[in-house]
Amino acid sequence: MHLKPLKQAKRHIMRALKSDTSGVAMIEFAYALPLLMVVGGYGIEMTNLATVNQSISQSALALADNMSRVGAQSALSTVQIRESDVNDSFIGLIRQTSNLNLTSRGRVILSSLEQNASGGQWIHWQRCIGTKNVASAYGPQGTGATGTSFAGMGSASARITAPPGAAVMFVEIVYDYPALFGTMFIPARTIRYEASFVVRDDRDLAGPTGGDGVYNPAPTATSYTCNRFTST
Image (tube, rainbow, N blue to C red; front, top):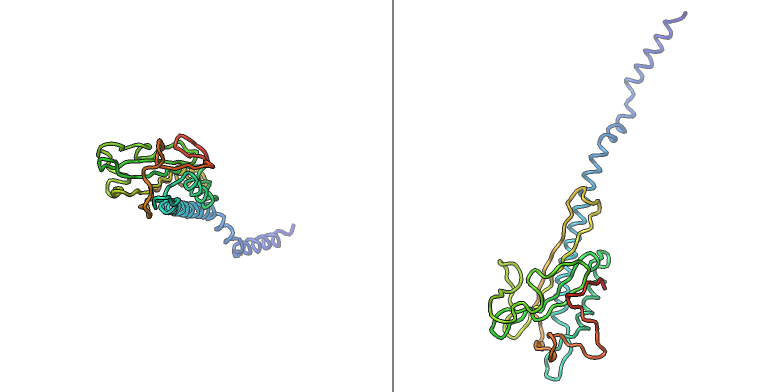
């Protein structure tokens, strides 16, 4: 038997395999791939979360700003706020945030903060849209109607109060963040933003007789009071 040539061939093959490094990069990549996927997925999730936070914040500011400007001029040179004005602003918000499904995943609360007859703060009227069952953090419509115990809206360190004879449009948006990867990288969370603007015109704050401060002339519009839970 010719064993020597076989041994030599075997040694030659082993030396060739030992010096062959063509698959090292692929093996290293296979080891690193799970870590790269985790780091990349986390980065994507954090970027998306930051983008959504910014969108919600800007939406709250835009709605408060829009509601501080709208209204119909009355015969007394004061501006009347109407249900149609509120609804148009809500529609604009829905279109602005169509990629977020804001009203099907959250709640938008619009409050008119004013002063009552005693000079105290008062949520005169409130309108809401969205299917999330959550109330204003500062109370329902009518909070502070009498007396001076209601301090206003916003955090204690940055309390918002209405000046005499004027109103502040205060917006709260509460939104359930739809994580891209479920709870793999971050726990389920609810995003909340607030914004406010003082009404720019001389608004008719009294409202219609027997009403809550918002007019609804014919043809009447839907009144999105806060006992309704709808996305449109």
